[in-house]
Image (cartoon, rainbow, N blue to C red):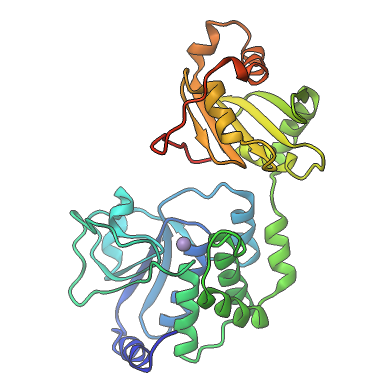
Length: 344
Ligand SMILES: [Mn+2]
């Protein structure tokens, strides 16, 4: 909740915005940052000369592409050469030290929910009178932006409310992973204004047309593994995200306790493991692939990566992976608290 004093400060900040200023809202685009950017745009529009949203990354996830399309989020790729077009910069859902692209940008506003960086910015000097609001206890920056809208008595459009709802849902994994009472209150408030049909359409955009041939490969190569598991081999794929999307699909199959979906991305073999918890796939990944590359994860989700060259020495890649998944008991399990865990 914002205090009366904080609301007064926010109103004053908005009131004092320079009518001639040209704002750029810089984000590392994901649902939370995109929604936050839309909210800030709504808050400062009309109070400044212009405001644009620029992203530093490519958006490739189908649900994020759907969010941009259905909610018509105006966004361009950040071009550092055009920095001089703007007089003010805002950074949302990130901190200057989080990405090289933020270096040297004199931010006037920072709103975020990540833990405060120990070394906030070596290269990025904040602008004079910069406002930094970091609330690490919150599940999403969208929650904070919702509080700002409430404090300013701005009723969000249904598209903006849907965006913020998507931001909170995504960052908290629909309150399954994180989220405080405050996130939940914001969520409930937004639900009244949001377009829930659109929200469902965004959530359901899990795959791209171009991925469908990979599903064919996955189904054709699917083989059973011990303890009600299965593995699929996809060969060369353009990114590890595709393997993740397909592995996640198989978690919806009742009776399948765990799945390993593998493929080759450039010079690396990637194995994505998902499970229903009846078997610790993090340990499985480690015991199978720890000796050839990086492997680890949690009970329900894990990942292993190793160089193509390792497996090549042992002949056929698919049988190499299969052999390891089948004969895991032959390898000792070494697992410590400090074991590196590739992001699964
Ligand atoms: Mn976030």
